[in-house]
Image (tube, rainbow, N blue to C red; front, side, top):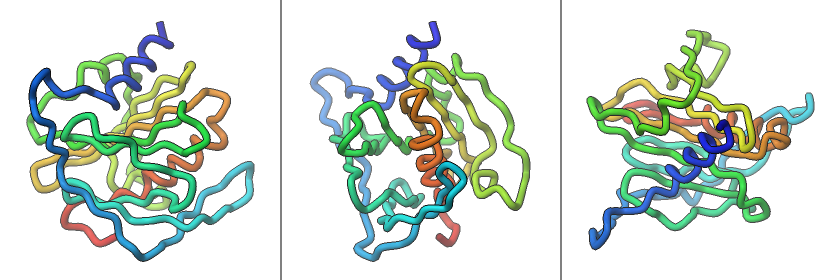
Length: 182
């Protein structure tokens, strides 16, 4: 059952447009300037060069090397994957304020994130939903900003939680909501 839930979440990140509809993705951009993305891997701090992407008014960092933008399958999300592992997916989804959350989110175990100034995830996000099965899935749900909420979806093989999980949590923590400074 957990596999089906996680698979449905992954499928949701690749949602297809309605038949015969023209899919115009929301505009996005990537800064030519490189920034640093820091994360801890097996107790050691690592730093990689990263590019700042902007989508729906929010911005976030994606490693500059070995990660690629997946072809848009709708107009409300951008998805990225490392070139060497197609089972890993990092998606930023825009959810208009007042719109219901995707039905697939109902199957996630939701918890409130603590208001901790030392935890960069709690700066932008209010809730975390998770399925820690195969594949593992984490969803961070932002507070509302400029009439939208953002969901950051992380999908990865369970055995890669320490590697990809750590990297993608650091990527999620870089989300800067509309109207905030990056």
